Image 1 (cartoon, helix red, strand yellow):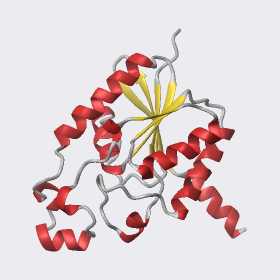
Image 2 (image 1 turned 90 degrees about the horizontal axis):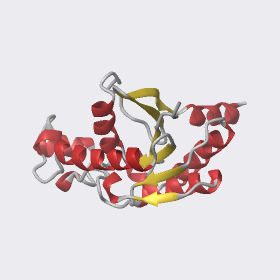
Image 3 (image 1 turned 90 degrees about the vertical axis):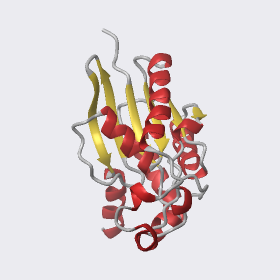
Length: 202
């Protein structure tokens, strides 16, 4: 029996803009020192788990690629950068806080920012990537490091039963391909971050 294809989706580690509540989009912001630490914590978790990953794909934006490089080095697996995994472009909203966006465009700003990438465009490039990965790596398990808005759109399209809860920085979501579609095995898990916090408080 052929093994099922698995994808371990990872949202990149936290950045200074994340901490300030600024939307990043395709603005190329690096990880903060906390984000780098988060990546090492996930790497430690994955290195001690029984599941073995064949490799990593990541967005070419540095907050994702820095996260992926830490994981790839710790796990000793290949890393491939792919621009299709970039965050959605938020146009004029990039670099603004929630309060600033609401002042300029109102509560429904997500639909009103004029020059942002559409959901349809995100899904087109996302499915192009997914279909290629499924064909090239059938029966394998690959990590994919990407961004919050891109990942939310893809997950809710691939696995309609998932909740709409905000995807956390450095969260791990694992999905598996079945004949009838993709099934979620783990969703928005940050156990590795909480474990470190508990150790620090002991």
